Length: 259
Image (cartoon, rainbow, N blue to C red):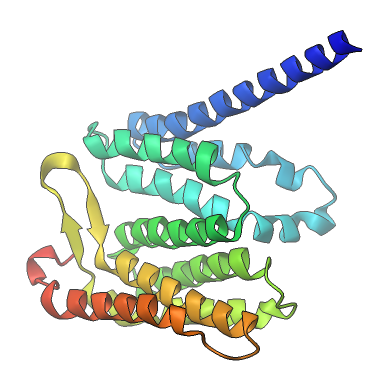
């Protein structure tokens, strides 16, 4: 019996190590393929292939699986698109993106606590908004607005589906529309902050949407958990987020960064 338990534990350990290694390879390879080929297509295909289990069921469940995995799809696709936007010359940003995507897959994505779920949603909004801003800056506003709606819907659902709110469909749509509205207002004045020759660029819109998501999420969850009342502990982080957003818009919107 002890030999059986030892063999079983060894197999479990081997499976865990193999899982970690494969996720690290996925994170690095998706970015490397994008840089080498100069196309986002191969990186996105690799991300989709890693989610093959979504479609390994009857077609009836495909849409539900897509919604359940939307945050992971947004994060993976966005890392690839940001790498694509940085060009085919290898820059520090490409290495950073590879490590960050691997860290997402290995360390953050498997977590399921309430705090981890909130952080996952915020990461999806930030990296998602970054990628679509860089990709759709020169496109008609409908592209950025639609993408922002999808990001907002996915992030909201990811958090609220685990809450006590059973009618979360409407709030997900509302939150998606709110992010879409902010994106539409910002479309004519998209600002990005660049950092020297590193290739790192951070769109102002990505920061604003992340701050708004943080503030909105804290307020909504507080109301949900406290019978319609907002607890005092959420006021400070929400006020800080809104103040930071106002400061950024008023004093850090120099046209030299305009896309």
